[in-house]
Every structure is written in C-alpha cells, then in structure tokens.
Image (cartoon, rainbow over all chains, first blue to last red; front, side):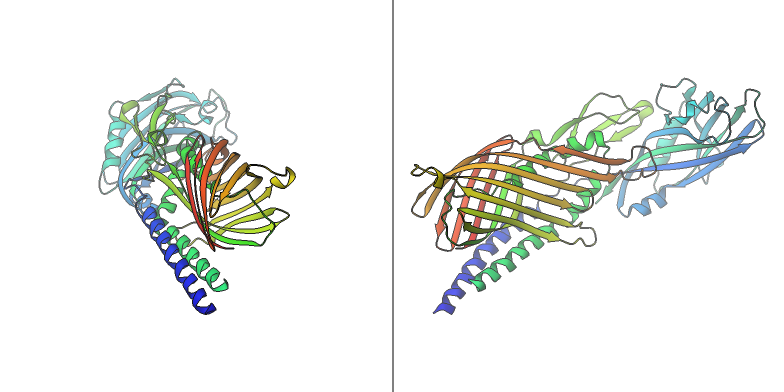
Length: 196
Length: 300
C-alpha cells in the first residue's frame, strides 16, 4: 500500500514537472532573434622608421580573409569606421621632430596605390596621441578626395582582399641629430557582420 | 517521500539542462554581443536585461508569513517572468569618435536592429543588434525550503553548469531566511514575518551579479488557501569584466564596471494552495519592473 502511494506521488510529480519542462523548453526555443552579430576588429600596422635620410617609405599588409577565418563565423559584410595614426615609440628621437607624409592603400595584386590621407609638419609629440584621420582636432591632417571611398570599396570586395598600406614622407629634424627612429602605427577599426 | 524527492530532483535537473542547451547559441551570442561594447554604451544595452533579471531573481521567495514550529522540507520549481515593452527595446547612446557626439537611439539586448551612424566621407558605424526576442523575460530556478525552527525557515537556491564548447559556466547560489513576527504580538488578524535574501549569479568569466532583498510580508489562511502580500526593498548589481573584442592592445579596451538595476521597492500580492504534499503559489509584483511569479513545490 505504501509502495503504491509512493508510486502515485512519483507519477504526479513527474507529470507536473514534465509539463513545466515543456513550457520552459518552448520559452527557450523562440527567444533568439535572427539578427547578425556585429564583431569589431582592429587591424594594426606598426611601421618602424629608422633612417638618417630625409625620406622614409614603409609598407605593411593585412589579409582581410585571414581575419574572417579567425572569427570562425559566417561573415556577411565588412566595413571600417575609423582610421587612426599614432607614434607609439620615439626612442631617443627629439619630440619636436616634424614628419610629413601620405598613407596610401592598394590591393596587393594591383600596382597602383591610392592616397587616403596627407599629413604635414606634425611633431612626434602631437602624434603621440592617437589621431583619427576623420577628426579635425589636429590641423595638418587632410583627407585625399576619393581615397576613403576607394578604401570603402576595397572592404566591400568579395572575396575579401589582401591590402597593402604604405606610409611615405619626409622628416624635418629641425637641425637636430642625424638618425631618426620612431614607430608609426596605423589602425583601421573594422566591423564584421556575422551570422551567428 | 524519498522516492518522490529523488524523482523531482532528477526532473528539475532535466529542466535546467534543457533550458540551457536550447539557449546554448544565445549564451555565446550574448557574451559576444556584450564584448563589442565600450563601457559608455554597454550599460544602456544591458540595463533592461539587468532590470528584468534582477526583478526575476528577487521574486518567488514569498508565500505564507505563518511559520509554525514544525518540520518543513519542500522542493519547489519557481518560475518568474517580467514584461518586456517597447521602452525596454531601445536606449540612447553616444557614437564612438570620430562620429558626431550626439545621442542616437539604438537597440538594447531586447531590441531588433541596431542604429547605423553615418560619418565623414561615408564611413558608417553600426550598433550591435538585439539578441533576445521576448514579450516577457522568463527565469526558472529550483528552491529548497527547510524549517521551521524558532518560527524561522531557510530557503536555498542553487544550480551550477560547467561550460562546454560555446556555453559558458553558469552558477546560481541563493540563500534566504524568513522569521515570523506574529509570535511577538499575540493575536493579530493576519500573520506577519520578515525575510532577507541574498543571491549570486555568474555567467562565464564576464558577468557576475549580486541581489539582495529585504521583505516584510503578511498572510491569512482560509483552509487550504493562503492569501499573502508584502513590500520588499531590493538591490541588484551586475559586474562586467571583459576585454573589448578585437582591441586587446588598444588603450581603454578593458571594461570593468558595476551598475545597478533600477528596481528598489516593490509591492506584491499572491495566492497559495496547500494540497497535502503539493504546494502551488502565484503572485504579482509591482514596482519599477512588474513580475509574475509561480511555483509548484513538493514536500511537507
């Protein structure tokens, strides 16, 4: 008799909780939106400029496809929303050293670069703060007409290309020292729309 | 009783595992979505989640205020839900530099499509999209009640899940104590008690939440039916600690902040039904966030 009672209690508990289980499962199933997940990545290129010449010229590459592969998701769209310049190390170089130059970009398979931005007579000290090329807080940085649009188009390409970023320009040492060493860092802030 | 308790426990574990596994993608997506935000915007994106989650977590403890000195052991499955309205689907955020620093309305974690901001030369910044599509935000937890000694009972909540693959570790630990006050006043038209509850909830490595609630409650029994109600002060905090996705070497990429849920005071009223070893309760909670709570319990 006692065994039967315990059995009935067990059935009652099971039935009720299984109903609860079904409700919980139903609630969990439909709760996720079918939206893209936006992942952000920062592509960073560090150009080490070490020269006793007036001119410098360095190139770094980024393979967008390898970034996509690292994300381990189905990427539907890539875009960039900021492009910054910064001097990250000055070593023994005087901070009043002025640099001028151009950032250029091309698809690795192409031969012609497209200029994105020019900068003129900016001291290493001013460049120790990360500067957006889209910000007007620092005079001496000017966008090249059509350059940003060209980069936007490159990011839109399928399959995602490898891009070469080139920085070249001149150094004004203000009459001090011979050799100039500094690290010039370019960062491209990107967004990847992924299908989770 | 031992047989029934074993059965209930096994089914409860099953409930939790199913709920977690069916939302496995959401857990991963949830963390990934959060890790895109800088500290200025992540609180707005998550505020409705914390409000709902905190309100849920601080629900389901209530019941009879009458705690006679007798053995009580009860295992309950407690379900709670907060309503998600239009106000919970959007928030205002300031776009990152170099975009115009004017606020834009975009999706919270309960919203749909995030806003797109257009900047100089046609550059665009897309805010994170919403993750959850809910009219109500549900939560279910197991709860064990043990008492009553010196007109006092203890309530315990616990579940733990060790993360696998894309699902992070999840752990809830809750402890509550309720003490009857009627004994100190003699004859009263209804029973009174006070209670204190503390809970800690962790999701993966990036979210930790603490909730504390202090409640005063009253109840009146009519045979197997109990009518109860009360007021509650509560505070829920969420700690977020993560490195922004894709920017580990960039300045200010580490996010470490604490923010509070907007609920602080609530009033509630409910009904309980005691059918021998089966105990059913349901109540409505009104505060900054409204919560519906229901439970079914087995025990003496």
